[in-house]
Image 1 (tube, helix red, strand yellow):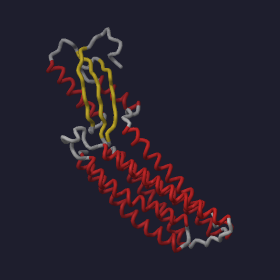
Image 2 (cartoon, rainbow, N blue to C red):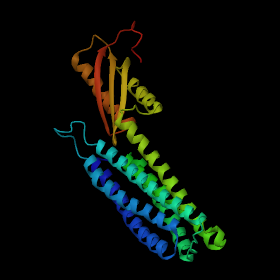
Image 3 (cartoon, one colour):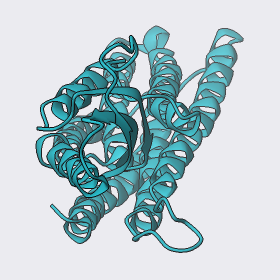
Image 4 (tube, helix red, strand yellow):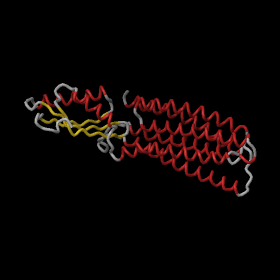
Amino acid sequence: MNARSEVAVIRHVTWIGFWVNAALMILKLFFGFWGHSDALVADGFHSFSDFGTDFIVLIFVAVAYKSADADHPYGHGKFETFASLLIAFVLLAVAVGIGWGGVSTILSFYHGEALPRPDVWTIVVAIMSIAAKEWLYRMTAAKGKAIGSSALIANAWHHRSDAISSVATLIGVSGAYFLGVKFRVLDPIASVLIGIFIAWSAIKIARPSIDELLERALPQEEVDNIRDIILSVPGVLGLHKLKTRRAGHSAIIDVDIKVDPDISVTQGHDIASRVEHTVRTHWHQDIIMYIHVEPFNPTATSCNL
């Protein structure tokens, strides 16, 4: 799949999430305030953050898939990484706000303030949200993994965190509705749990983006796979200094390959070209690869490192 097709997939999936989140946000905030449920209001603000991060994905991913230019010779992949970090920061801010509000309500309850009974419609909206957000998570995650989009996968986890928070909302609202006055504190307790779930999701999203910005290597199994692919190319007698890192949806690979010292420069270049083509074919199309050709020395101990 080429870059234009991948951008089209990301935009299509994100627009679906955008409109679903808009509908859920309105329903949750309206019935949360009208139905006296802190948990559903918190869940509504979570959907509002989803709504906002969809904008981030739509804006930054289009830039991330632009071709390399004079100012960005390695491409624009890091814009996608930046988008993922923005999503994480938005989630973390939402988590802190929701948690603080829930704790304040719980403290007020234990100081004698009576909490109103949630309306039955808050339960209905929570069930609707669980179903919608779990469907969005599965669809978005599948598409994100298929095209290797970190921003789309991050947005998928945002949907999953909203589904989990809606489960907490359902439990809290149902307890407050069915179990009586003494158990109405379950609703703000649920809102605090929602804040914790959202914070956990923010950390999960931020970690790979931070690893990428810090130039962390690809997972070892992928590095081993790349090494095996390179060594399978006819004419490659060994390799060393294999280094990898990620730039958004692209992977950057640096490697020194060992070839017969008696072949011509042209033959060495042809082998290097076959290495790049083979890695693209058998591992991933979207790579930036730098190959240095060296003469093979059978007495060297580092030729296969």
